[in-house]
Image 1 (cartoon, rainbow, N blue to C red):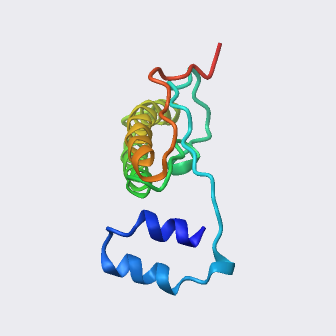
Image 2 (cartoon, rainbow, N blue to C red):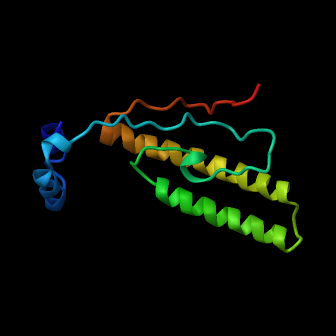
Image 3 (cartoon, one colour):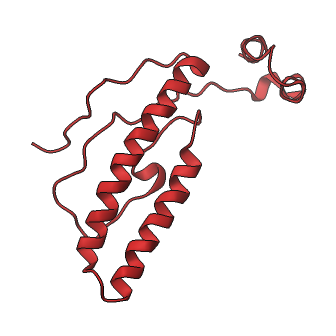
Length: 133
C-alpha cells in the first residue's frame, strides 16, 4: 500500500514525498472514503441540530473542515437572533438547517469531484435524495 501511495504522489511536493519515505509500512492502512449521498432538507425541524460531518460527511478531499466552521458560524448567527427576541428557536434552527444542508450538499459535490481525481472515487448521483416520503 505504501508503494502505491508513493507512486500516486511522485509528482507532488518534495515534503510530501519525504513524509511517505519516512512512513513505516507495517503502520500503513487502507481506508475507504465516502461522501454522503446528497439529500434535500428534511421537512420537520426538531430541537436537535447537526453541523459539520454529522450533517454533511465528505471525503478529506476538499473543504469539510471549513464547512464545519461555517456551519458553526451560521448557527451562532441564528442563535443570536433567538437571544435578541428576533426569532423563535425552531424557526432559527429551520433557517440554519435549510441553508446548511443546501450549502453542505454543494460542498459534498465539490469534495466528491476532488475525490474522483485524487482517490478514484465513483461519481455521486446527479439528483439529491429525498430522505422523507
